[in-house]
Image (tube, rainbow, N blue to C red; front, side):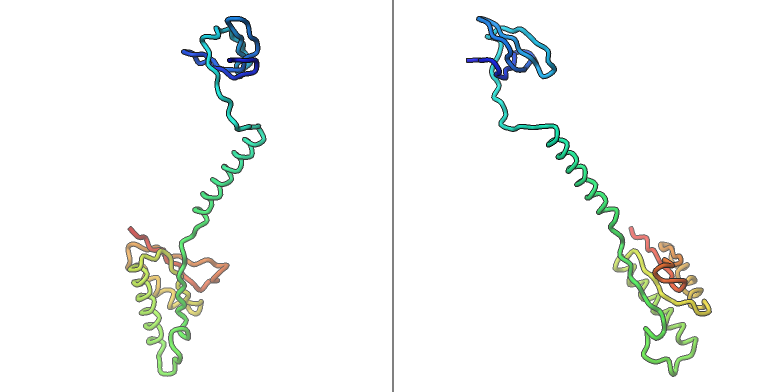
Length: 176
């Protein structure tokens, strides 16, 4: 039995709404836009009301929360950085004593270490390295640049000044 205030749908039509007036064989339905329709009682079926109450504030809060969650996820991806491996080529970091070493020996040890660590990084698919060479006279820096130019799949440039000052070179390795 349909009564005032019930939610109903019209069969074979898209009209639905609340019963606002009843008569013997017909009723008047008001849809969600406020339009009223007179239909036969035989043409309608009752619709069970949902047990969920929604209000605009709850919906707005849910949308806001979902949007913020989306931003957090995407910003986490963009914040993620490629880790940097630092290789300190200062001679006192490579050997305990330079007592019986010439400048040539020291430079060769530094370059061999740089070459070995670069090859190791390429094999282990590292993307970024920072070679700390110090300022000095610039001989080691020039030799490192000569070494790096031999590789087609790397770029090199002065490392971040705030972190390393003038004495470091960053290498980026392009991986397939």
